Image (cartoon, helix red, strand yellow):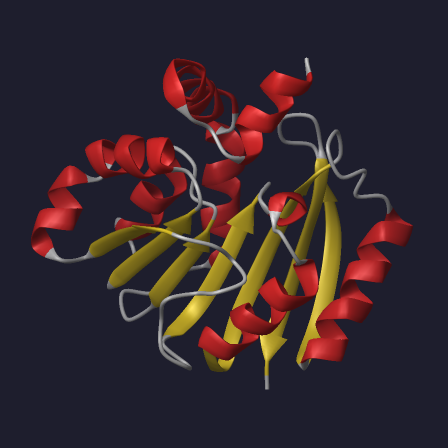
Length: 192
């Protein structure tokens, strides 16, 4: 069971490919709800941290001007690139293998950053939040979608994350429970 759990954090090989397809199917309604919650505009430059199979990237690219993604799994980069092939060709989507703690993007590049079920897999949550803040432009928003099964995402945990976000410099922090998939919490924060 532990081997399967690890695949959700960094899918690889045949089992990782299967896990990616499972995530795409199982999280379809959550991805749609997250993108709707972002209220993207056609001028937005968006980053998804931990894009997995690339389904949310694809939805975001239908609305935003540009969508980038970073994921530590080479298997997920391959799967997401196949899923977003047409938008990659036009230059509207860019996917890279990498880490939340070292985002390969310049300061203030994105108006929107989001993660869906990847936060608890970040090597260092504090460094990841600092990097997120760095690449987000002034007035930009950051959406976290936490999974109650893996993270717990109870009110007390949402408040702890809100404190971490405040400590990095985020403001206007809000959290709301959701019932998509196994349930969880949306946390929205903004950069001044």
